[in-house]
Image 1: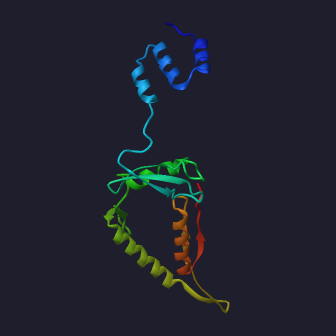
Image 2: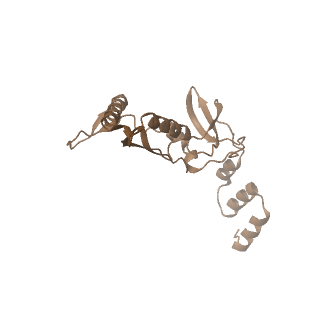
Image 3: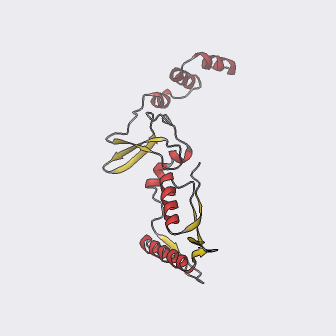
Length: 193
């Protein structure tokens, strides 16, 4: 049976979603079973999981998320329809939160290139954190200013702190507090999408 474009549009304007999909697929000579399978009611909650309400970690909006946990492992993260802020919607960054947690390509080691070296070395994160702490302390101590123009300032101008949009607000807050406690003057944070 041949269906003209005009007839197809008339059917589309008056037909319902699932019925139209089935009728259109039959009219076009397709097997209706795959279409019928897609239009069946899908389960909302992944099986055998516990739903934990959470908040997206990226920006100041605070969109609600539902974290599905099975055997103490995150298996899914989606928008929380009960959230009065986002009503189940997430931006692209929020929708990709699952990859933030379980991505197998996530770096778990630090790459380090020694001064005047031509290659990178793989180091443990504990080693990298200790090295960063040592260098921050050394730079701070070597460039510390107690007074300026007869006034107590207790700061260093040799360090700066820059937060970013990939950090959540809580992290930016803690980072700014840490920088202030070190006497850092140059502090900037950007926690927007």
